[in-house]
Image (cartoon, rainbow, N blue to C red; front, side, top):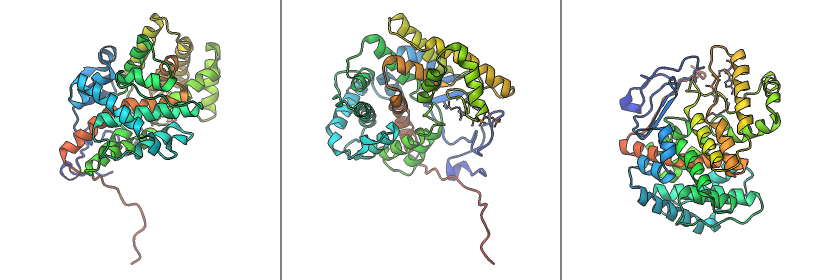
Length: 374
Ligand code: COA
């Protein structure tokens, strides 16, 4: 894409293209100034609202990270999220057949699209609704009745409770919070950009979130953690890892949970989620796939290095997302919708930030079609 002046499009091309990346023409194109989060792919550092992800994930709740990203007070956000969940629950009869979709992200996108922006004006309303719809879809898929939200609970506790039907213990609640905080925002990426493009037209937040959900749904963005768990099940024992992985690569398939467009070192969020798993273990919660996951990761690094010696292909966030969400009790079909629940925090913040600029994002394309007849 030829560079447009920042004045006309809000874009400039000052950032470098990551080493070894195959270009889509958009790598490294700066499309926004943001105070929300920063990804340093060379050093493996993620800053969210002025905090390193490692420290934020052990200290903050979902409400806390929303408060930081949205510039609001923790307690007010907690109340608003509870109200948002209750409001979404009261609208469930008006969702048509949205929650009957077999794919969780399709259900979430369709259900969210039913929200009227006038009835869900606040970021917390939409974040609450996404959690209610994701959980209700998971219950329905199992042939179970949906569980009504409990406004008094924190968002993490209520999300797990609505999904699995039991009030969780403090260790599991802390595990859910650690996950939600860790993936709440991640610089510029496909879904965040989609949300900002819609917001830049002065459209409403619900529309922007629906666009973001559509982008996150794709397997190259948010769809990997379920397949990671499938991979661990297929490998079953550490000794089987290398041969299984070689077989996948020989068949022309990618190893899920490995590689990243920006990180050239191990994704820092992988370590954060591994530590969350360790805390669960220490609290006596069973974490059945951790040892196998470590062995498979090690084997995957080895086989990928042998094939791509100059391109670091290491574990990304999805690898340990799969192991953590599984240990917490979420069904694997719900993994990407849970990612969406968390990322709604970041999307809403980016939407507000984009809106505040008052600038329409209007990129350019290069015409490669036929010339009109003379
Ligand atoms: N397994 C096997 N090979 C991989 C790979 C993976 N997970 N990730 C990248 N590669 C290979 C590519 O096939 C390519 O090989 P080639 O040069 O022989 O064609 C090379 O590494 C460079 O890949 P490229 O396509 O430039 O990487 P990308 O920046 O487009 O990829 C991802 C980023 C995330 C899309 C990619 O690593 C991937 O598909 N990972 C698996 C899905 C996943 O975990 N997604 C969640 C991301 S958080």
